[in-house]
Structure formats: structure tokens, C-alpha cells
Length: 93
Image (cartoon, rainbow, N blue to C red; front, side):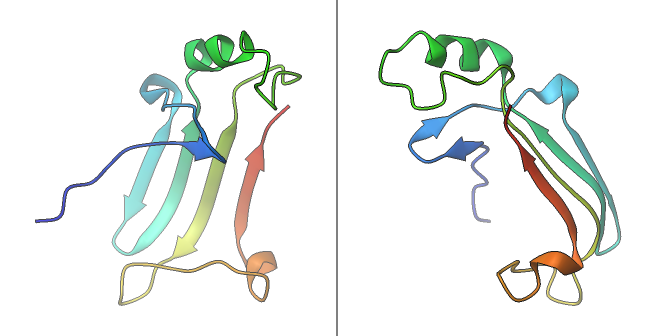
């Protein structure tokens, strides 16, 4: 079995995952709600670095995907052609 690595990265920065405030809800091959929130403590620590390019941010990042059918293969690739067909977003204030 392949090991699953949990991480929430943007560029070279790992924001870790705030498991308490993140949600994974799957029914069969459909993602009902996948909300991944970055760890606020990790974000604050990163903001202390002078070279952190996102230090202007107010909150740690959050990604969500909702109501996505993964089909028979159990996976999906979102690209420029189909990105508007799905309810996904990356918030970073």
C-alpha cells in the first residue's frame, strides 16, 4: 500500500493542516466537502521570517472542493479547460 503524505503547500511553504477545522466528506466516488485549512500557528511562524513572500496575509490559506464526482477511476484532474465546471477555491487573505 502506498503511504499517504499529508501536506498543504503553496510554493516552497508548508502550512501544515489544521485538522480540527478541516473537513473531509466523501460519499462513494463523490467529494461532498473537502475543506483544508492551513495551521494558524505555522502561518504566524512563517510570517516572522523577513523573506516570507506571503507575510502580508491576515489568515492562513484555505482550499476547498465541493460536489465533485471522481468517476470510476476515483480521481480527477482540474485544468484550464474544465476549471469552471467545479466548485473549488483557494483563499489566501
